Length: 373
Image (tube, rainbow, N blue to C red; front, side, top):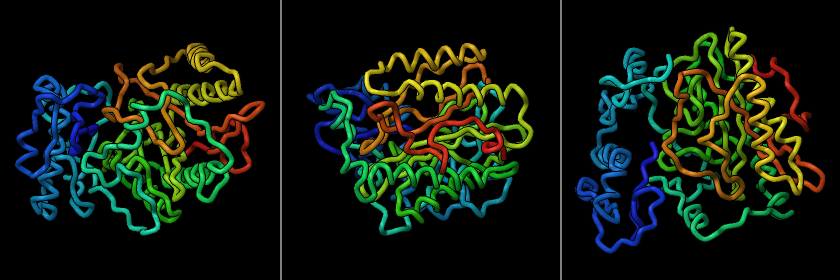
């Protein structure tokens, strides 16, 4: 759900569009709800409309007082107390001949969870109706340098190191809850509540309208899977991607891929290869290493294990800025399984420090038992 619109003057609603607005075109449907979302022209409006129109359901739900309807107006969510048949039904977008690349099928999802801890600091996109991270958009347009963090940002109260430590604790909680028959919606609940307990905002929540507090990517889902009422099955591999935002204003990001039940040898190969790719790349991280060297190492290790690298995604920001908005859930074209591992690392004088490492695990060590559920 990467719906991007602009309620601010001077900004086109099409993602990435920097054209000046000389002949503004406002979305007429949004205008009916009292929201002015402006495009720079007819071409941009048509190009983005398939994604943009998802905000209409949100506006209708927010302003139409339909929260208590048994059948959700958006066709993608239902209350937690709904019957199982409804919960496990296909969302509206997946009906009518939708072409899936693999065997995985989505279910409906629960309503978006609320921030219940008043001590939690919210990023700017948390309250934006389209979830736009305006601070990131401004930085992307004006800053061409990679940000370097100093001692105050790393070691201060609720700093980057703290955010990463909290992210690790939250991922541990989510991973502990994972098992056969557990829904990814339940993982979302556990992660959300664990973040609240630590005075942290779950960074994915409402980021360009991402509706959940964690990304759960199962089997052929590459990344940014949206938690729903589907139950995890024996033999699934599940990636849990957690990011926590601390009161100091920093994001700590990490993820791991888990084995659920009896995963076959091919599934184990894919997951271990993903681990080895990150482990091999981190061994090269030090001042002076070129980014392309990391990519070459990852590609070589993947190829040696008869895997390929997903070229669409190549990393993102971290620290005081979170990510880059996209169209969210991505799957493999051939329906084959995908795995990933992710850490936030600090480059030091002679190498790197893994800020999101497990307790007493300063370097990555392969231990499949830690990932078995």
